[in-house]
Length: 123
Image (tube, rainbow, N blue to C red; front, side, top):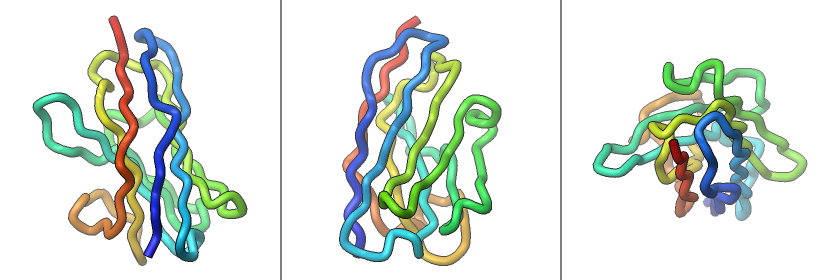
């Protein structure tokens, strides 16, 4: 199993940037595909970005392309989400998640989840 703890959320003005981190422990972090999801007020949880076990492949939701960058440091057991040009619509609780095998965007395929970190973007 793997335990995940997100950090880096906060309040930012529209157009600003934040970098989220997700620290993993308990298992072989480098063997997992890692993903970021978010859940806004009154909305369902949605996929944001994912990265393969070695960082060689990344996958983004259309809403994240060109603004967000997912990366990982396997030596530090950490995955990051750099978010630029933030919009009020990006306001949500952001979760990191881990899964085995193939990179994917479906939340149901992810086995382990963090508790989430709140991101609030003011207009």
